[in-house]
Length: 562
Image (cartoon, rainbow, N blue to C red; front, top):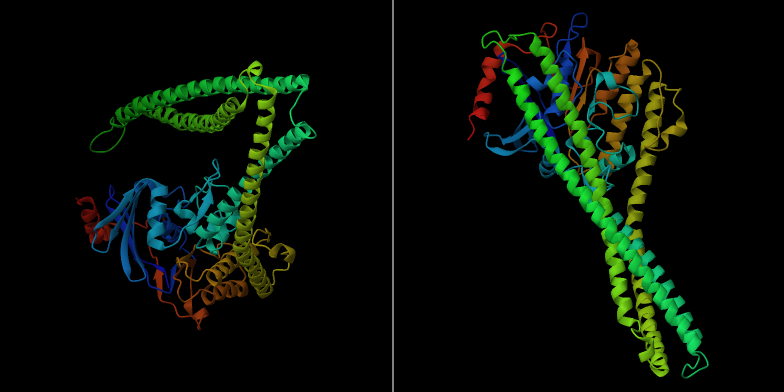
């Protein structure tokens, strides 16, 4: 069985020489603090930092300057141990002996590396191209983390940066359930190609049938054509068709020239924009260097206004760059489409010229008649070939439909099991306000009120995980991280019932890390707690000098790497 376990979390603030180290155990871990004075001591920061280190973007409080911190996570995947390092958008992965295995600033590259490490990833259609690609790592963790400030029922909103793909909850969940896997996506792609091929073959078949009808009407009842006027009409129709092809070729050629010029101009604009950005970055650097080397205070207050202005201009770069990139993608798409049209017309023209008579006066009626006969025979052969292709295509579609039926059955099973689990949980907590009709599908959305919001949020995440591991038992078990599930004031009986649900419904293979105020393990006598961590720090003083001194050697090892 594949599982990821968090062993130790390290948080460093090198500039201030402060840090925090927290060790975890397999099983159930509870981070708690005094019920009266234990707010804002850092419980949420610790929990947010776990998946933040693994490539998600957690939503930190404004008091926590995430970009100035270094995050290091010591994890195990089955019997293999790793260190994952994050500083801003730089990620590094080391083995247990600090041999570097991977580094990047690109989330797509990180997702590809984690796919091999975890044996799991989420694949979604690109918002712009619709092509299936490996999604950012955050999509792998959506079922495993709940932010205390984002408990809002059946929604994935505990992380930032969930905008790069269409917010397709069904597609995300079917990935986790093992339904939208590579085999399924390959089958869908094959079906789309087969249906497109079928459409083209039917269109080609119709053209040939119409041509055969025309040829038959000419040949029927005569051995050699003697009606020259009819022959001239046929030739004139061919000439008109030829002229139309030439006109269309010229039109598409002009379009291609215009689009290529437009593309060149966009590339020039992007190059110039990058040069402008580099100049602005130098300006920002020059402004940033106007600080006192001992006290780090700005020498001139006027620099603040200038710094804000320069940063604002740099932010404009990203907007302009995105707009230019979008325009470039649109031009490339149009180029590709028009080039395909141009090639098709050129092929048609060449084919037409090869078969069309070049000089009506030089071709005898007998040759014309023979040409019709040969054309008819060729068309009949081509018609037979298309019928064979259509027959093969139809069989391939049937085979793929059988394959997709297996996944349709899995979808049905997933929704039925989800409905059953959600109804049981709603009955357990007496959630009468939830309309049971909205629990029939994983796509359904429902609302709760007051203190029941946190309950519905937790049961939704837990039941989705149950469905996931029933349908996809080989999928990796990520830690379940719950940030203060009792953030909303709950009555004592509801609070005890909620935590009983949390503790007793976690799979033994899955690590649980949960935070709460004033936790009393005696209230849950039947639950085995593997570690209870009491935070006794002052408000906003999670990091300390002692932890920095005791653990700075890790930073030294990483920064001294070859």
